[in-house]
Length: 512
Ligand code: BES
Ligand code: ZN
Image (cartoon, rainbow, N blue to C red; front, top):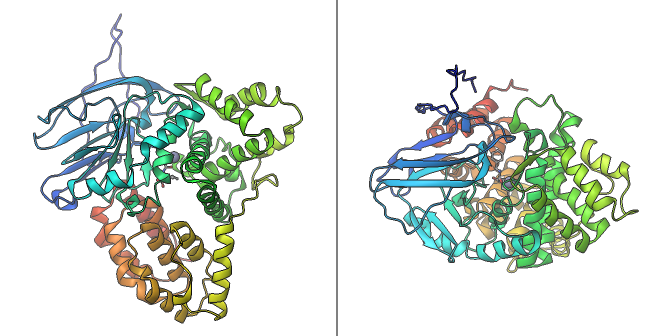
């Protein structure tokens, strides 16, 4: 960002700023027609979080400042414009669009998209926008969104934003989802055909309470957005699909947290409240914010019981509605409204450890999934040679069992086992992006070479950062830097500017 200094004439009360965005604005991706599925029209979308709003609008780009807005947008008549604001899905498509955002939002929630999009209603107040090739699949995949909204509202009070629509972006969208108010942005890689990855929708929707309604005032307190959201997401998943799935998702999340804990070098970066020295807000978004944050709330839930804790959280969302708050604000409210009225449940030292100390507290909930224990047994037989890959009883495995199975395979597994699994289950060409990613990561660890072509295809097709940053990093660490760089050079024009920069930085690291 850059300081914008304006001299106010005597008595002036308003400022009008004329500005143009630049083609290189980091918060915008301009796609050529060839980069869309339809191939005939260009596409534009924004990604403002964490601090890219300033690249396309001159504003005070901090989550501590909130504003309302209205906008008028002109597009070529065949393209539709959408914003994170009120819009009428049945309105005329005439190249003339207007928007109004009456609830005060922080800058990172300002969003725009323009493209050749179709709309399918899911309910009266919920629907999905997508390119036509995928709009039916998207509506089917996300059909449970109204139930998710109802479960959220039952637990944490009314949805306060009017409509809730989903937008499926081209595959270069660099995130799984982005909680732009009234219009969550989603990667098409969520569309697995079996609703197995829709926890991301539950997550973005949960931000309507945790994050959008009550916002972290600094990215150092990102757990106030992401930790609370991950907790709410999991409660909603449990409500809709049952404990079995919710617990599996907790176990997988905890493994991701453990992995980040092993990788983060500075212990101060493993506390929920991050240090003043944090320079780059993107560094706040590790699984410390997401999963340690979630497990902090699990800890509170376990100690106070659901009845008390649910009522507390509901009152919290109401009390701080449309405000931006810090860890200290959260703590003060919790002490007054949860801990003081229910003495003897937690100690000050326990809370202090969760919020301000490094590492995984000993009071972290122990999560055990029977489904995964079963997978472990089968895996042991497979690794021990008692059963072949084709004998694994995978008929009833969901995506979650597959992810657990793949993540826990030993990296130094014999190549024959990799081949056996690939032959039996076609993992290298899995249509489920999470499964494909887990398989590629493990295959790179084990130097299983047959993934090379499908992996290249994946890296050319998918721009979701969670997958591609770790794949490129693993390739570089594995001594496949040259091949990875070749793939990157080919894929780069299709990636979002945020992803391009992140991956370029991987190749700039000094070689070990
Ligand atoms: N708000 C985040 C995405 C984000 C974080 C954008 C930091 C820019 C900077 C969003 O809600 C999110 O967390 N998405 C996750 C999915 C979730 C289920 C963990 C993602 O994109 O993978
Ligand atoms: Zn989130």
